[in-house]
Image (tube, rainbow, N blue to C red; front, top):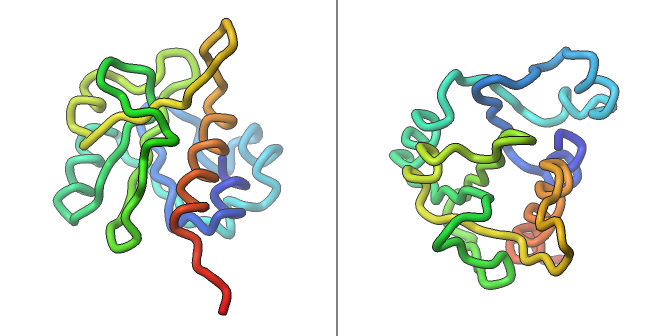
Length: 139
């Protein structure tokens, strides 16, 4: 996720809850230095972090397969608004408490039998979608 965030010039990654934080060996192995090029911080509570970001004007999407989620291809982000994407735990996903404080939930449409992607793949798909809608245009 750190390298993907670097590729799309994401302004910040907020790590929450039970998760490895840099310089953890698994992150160092996969991030290949992106922990130095992407600002990151750690917060204990994802729920509180989402609420604080909303208070600053951010629109927060939980990336999760839940009732009422909008398919990713139907989401049209606004360029004049900060967007927060909340990805969950690899096994348990985004907690219901965090989903409840988010402004909306977004789901990646899938046709296979598993209906499950790992969190790094999900982040890549969703960040690409948002990038394509929000990227600066060349003049």
